[in-house]
Length: 540
Image (cartoon, rainbow, N blue to C red; front, side):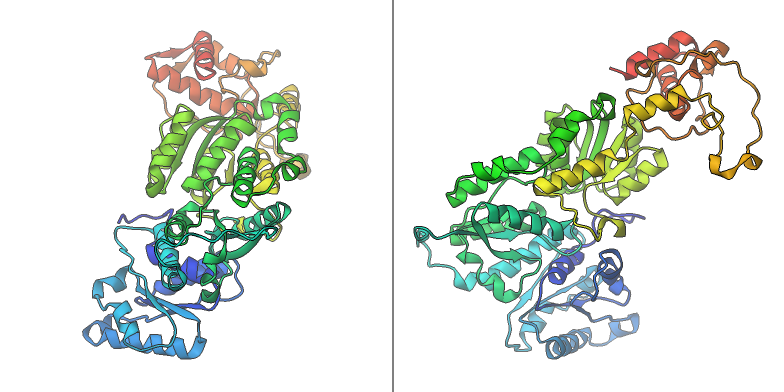
């Protein structure tokens, strides 16, 4: 465990809370000290849920440690059982609660409740949130669906002729990135194929619904970080195959349609022919400098990071210069994906390492979590959020899936809107000498009385450098220049004049790249030749 200001994942009991909060008629009794109730805010404030999570905390204090903390837990469990009357209960301990070693599972079972009580043993100091969600869902499925399992060696009965295929959607939880809308989109897509959804779990399911999981013909794994372990168990016990394709992006959605059609024994072509997505046409119709070869850095959970890299490279024409994840359990998958783009995967849960890598790579767009949003803001780079952890603005009131064909439309809008269009760049360069566009100009709506003090005059050459001649490697979204970082190289006067030919909104990055090039190559004085050598170097 590492103490840090920010963290990509909470402790594993937060993952268990995500499963419990997403489900109905399930209650979680958590042996935890005062203060751990902060986790409720994740759901009520960030996700905007209109009710608090179904969690009862024992909330022991320091003075209780010399008493019978086991009795505190049993009292909390009895009260929760009597008050909420759940269909099932899960019990466990938070990080601090686990140190007391009161055995919540054994204590709860001794109470003789008439409902299933599932102990969730989460190694708080070795594992994190997504693993906790996966383990909780797996234990729930085993405990509740297990009694309905066929005898070993029993073959699965064939579906009756003319009967529609049924599947389960596995993986969506509370606090998940766009899980609510992904369910709607994928359910609609499966309906178009003539496939019924049997159970969606954990989100929206009751413990009684979990008893029906074995009735489906196959399982659709939407989020492997949560559902892959449970899906593997269902395959072994109920002989249900599960999907491997995650339908994020146009190409992946088409592959997903063909995969589920094969499992259901239906024809996918009518659905594929009627697919409505604007991403392919939009990405081909915009001007080339808007998208093509934009350098993009991607970081998030493994599922969304891998899918985003494919969309960025194959469907939008971006150049993937960095790919990483905080999901260490899926590190191998991310490394294999990174190798396709000729980059080394960044597997870390330290946001400072991610920030250092973004600063090193100088991307023109960052796709990441709320952490990368803050990192990109500090570095002056556009950013779009693709993965949890997210903040309140990433739970929109509008319909905004990430999966399916409509999800591809949402992704296009979300990713390209932070970028600057080539025409916009051209106009800013053309009018850079206009009184409203020159360096230091304040917004025109403030009036002339707010004009800034005039800076010392510097000779400028009237002919601007062409867009392709800047040392920006295509950077289109550089903010207003800031004070240059300290450098060992000195600018020659003629180089300073040449630098002024570059549009002001990207001049700061041109200066930084040139100084970096000069320092790395031992150049003491930056000349015009150095400026263009740096341009050639970073444009490769």
